[in-house]
Image (cartoon, rainbow, N blue to C red; front, side):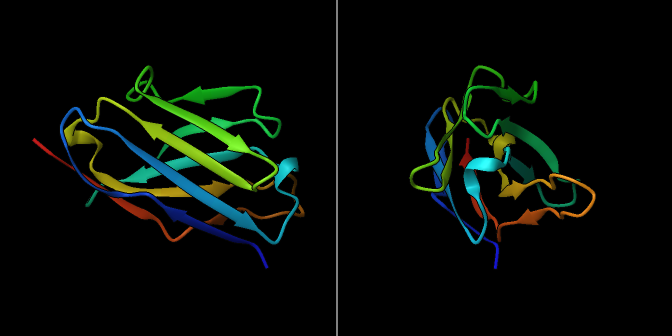
Length: 119
């Protein structure tokens, strides 16, 4: 079965860095674009970054552009989110996402990893 397992969250001071990892299994990882989302308490879940299946293209939300970098290692079935210059407003649960590829497919979510930035 499809599994997405995030790790790397924690508590850091404003201006610090964290690297999130999402280990995937149960599907052909190299065939799928992958995404990171985040959700702060009481707020909706927002797309943070997307990376193409090959890793050659990436897109970012305006609020993380220039600070976060998404990457992937298809040999290790892992997608990463390097987060630099962290701000208190980056505090949220971060979720790894495998989008659906077609109408016959479905999307999957990891369990989330908490990122807390202190001021």
